[in-house]
Length: 191
Image (cartoon, rainbow, N blue to C red; front, top):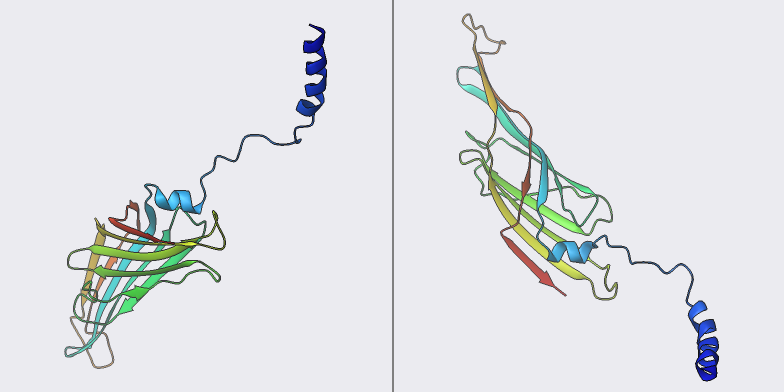
């Protein structure tokens, strides 16, 4: 018994010498863990606008706009995506990739294409995570496609007493902004 108390007395100072402030690790997943997991981008406020204006019966001035923000759950910053087209008559056919604007110093690169006839939006994004080993970051790539359901209003105007210098006719398509998740159907990782 005396030896047991002596051994316990010798070990107690070591137990009391454990580092102060060590608690459970932060359970919030980092960039790498989120990127390897099942995640979805958030497409915020996707909006489409098109205007067809005839200044004369034969002279058309027309264009279409697409705007939205994209958020990757591995990064806090939003990516701003916009495009303008004058390619008649639907403006966007899904065959041109437009680069999105990313915040300065961002580790992401994002592009998109959109087809007005099919309402299909394609997202292509690469991003890097260095939270697990800054010397060897992991570069991820994701590609996703979604067919959008848009609530659009169309207004038409025809000038019944047109004179040169006036607007002959106009047609405007304006779609209400829509927000939705998009899960990439293809994802890669390169260390």
